[in-house]
Length: 108
Image (cartoon, rainbow, N blue to C red):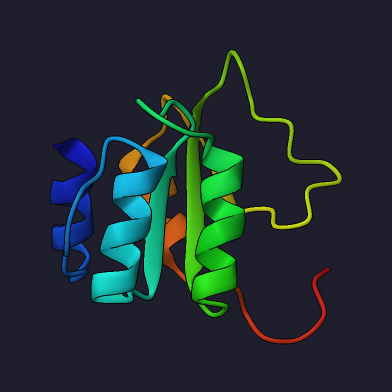
């Protein structure tokens, strides 16, 4: 509920919410969003598989993976890593920064 409110506060339309990877993929196919926020703890399926499948369906989708700071996800070597990993607890400012697309060009 908090993330939904923060997304709307930053002028993102929330097309849907899913508890698991299968339901999320159905929503992605139906709505084709520009942003996908995934919690590492899904009721069904794997968050990393969901990210990979989402990118296969929507190559330009921006992805944010939310995970507890005590157990950051193992994304090294992942073929489809998220654009941003946001560790809980996080500040509203950190979430707002995660929503911004990366600047074009080489990263520092």
